[in-house]
Image (cartoon, rainbow, N blue to C red; front, side, top):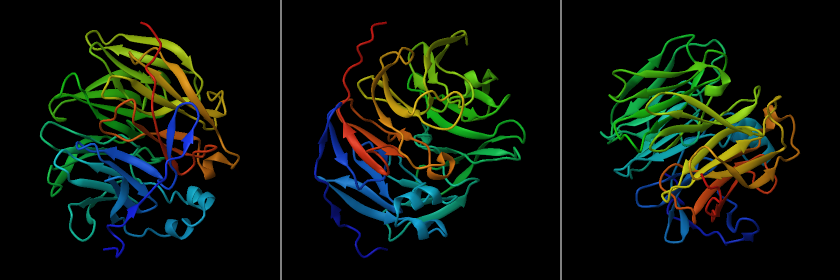
Length: 366
């Protein structure tokens, strides 16, 4: 274990404009807020927990070569994907980490313990969830050019055992975007997948993947990453770089699709605050459906009608496919609107760093 574990990293607040924010510049990514409202984050391969006004290092991911050879210089770190990882803490306080294709656990011992390998490097932010029985679900996200089989894994509450919860057969989907628990139906888990024609669907299971329902026609309209849940609707913003993006929602009772306002760019990440505000982010990436050079923060009260709060310009590093798209993300777990964490990469003023902002209530009336 690292000799400097336990040191607290103090971060001085730095106020910026619109919306009011606190800069957490050294923090590369804030991944999760646990049930005790403690934030878990990473700087490179260091895993940190916010405790008593400072960030305390808990563990470090093992070195991964060659990516860690380039972590000293931010543009190189972006090109090498040196920051890619996941940190998730379940209801019992057990930590799950993913980096360089290995799933780890950390339960206060002297180091991270490897559990098993997955296809791909890690999963998309916010796409890990926990069911009623305490199992945590991980959907494989990787390039999958050959369209081989894709797995959803689950890990026990104590992080001591694991199994494949569901297998998408070869040729059916490219990868999993996320697994989400339905707050209106605690037994239900929803899965988003993509990316190409006949690969974009929503899936629902109410019995831990013993059976599964499919929704959608495989087109870009059903290409979603993050889902937003209301009593009557399943909502999303489309994630397409090739077709015009929209706000969409599906009626829970009838399965009817409603397509709403146009969105300037693809949308990957988002969250719903504990006080009921839906927050979504747009991404700057290459493609005919990307109409702006800014990544935006959008808010909504119903998950379907959205308004823009603010935006961040894409930085000058090109090509984007090498030096990263302009991406905004936020942690999973409970957050209030007046204390909301955001991380960014490839954006002016928010690259490899994080901020905490106060979100205003949406002005949209529906």
